[in-house]
Length: 463
Image 1: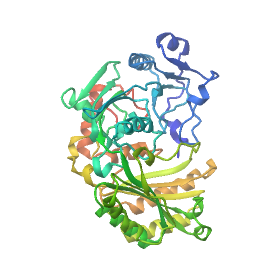
Image 2: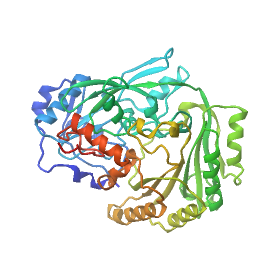
Image 3: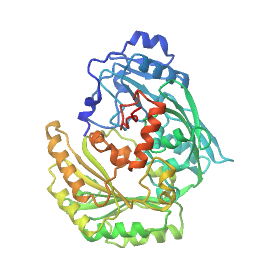
Image 4: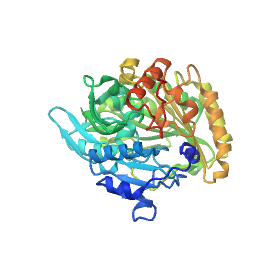
């Protein structure tokens, strides 16, 4: 749900637009300007915030000028990349739109790339594919590189190559004092540690250096199966035992929302699974075969494809949903039965539960090596109830909250990139206590006045 983001805004804040235009060299858009409404259009539906100004910087020096301007004028500042965050817009405040920063330098010999944060995952992936190389991001090509990376990055290569941050070698960050820092394992290692999972709390990440892996063709696509307790639990167990080259995203949802599902399944739930095996040939087919054998497939679209094909085509879909995320250690038949029952009872336009089995390369990185600290959790779950009428928000949010509580086993945990209107209440769940304490101390060093608070905010430690 996105309607509550205005609670983050300090009432009465105003942006002196003429002074701002005199300071920056990039484009400054204010209400009434041509292009303003397009600039405030984002992926999520239901977001109609009216920023006082949206700045598209011309370069990193412009980013520093905007940061200084916001700090000196005590303005609330939001940072927008691909526009997938509920925190990328704000009423009456200042938005720094990084989509104008689009530089990309790929070095095929060293298998590294420097990418500016305004690029999307799809744009980067398409360019890297020309060299037969990949970096793993999320499951959507339109997400911005900066946002998905600083939160962790859980995608189609998570079991084979780990999180996005596991391939982050260095970054350039403009901190709250307007200074540009180039950070890596040797240079300002605390800040480098913090931006690998700590979100946008420590500055504006303007450029990122990624490791690339050799990969051209994958075996991937959609597999749709009947949504029964046995199929769901069996799928999760197979995914847990599968080769690390195979990453899966299982969605339990009503069959009638998929246009290619026969009418006979419209009154039931189905499993729509996206599967990506990092490779091709007989070994890949053998890895996928047990999933196909769980039940007679309703649809089987799995085929060899170039890696960029794993991202769905761009469309004009802007969903409004009550959404929740959690980590658990196991997901069994009882959980599957619970999910099927709760989806059937939902009154939303469309309700779904997504299950991602983790492990593999992601789990082999030590918990303290990065600020992302859920390395040992076996499963990540997303819960969503989509609706059109804002008056229904409360009932669908309650449904999502209750199902989250019912599925939660073990230590509570949440993926910081998927926090929404529950951010303030659950931000601490994204980090164990020792990680949280260290993040707050680093926040105090680099952002003592909490300038970068319009996000999944980690407050600075008390002085």
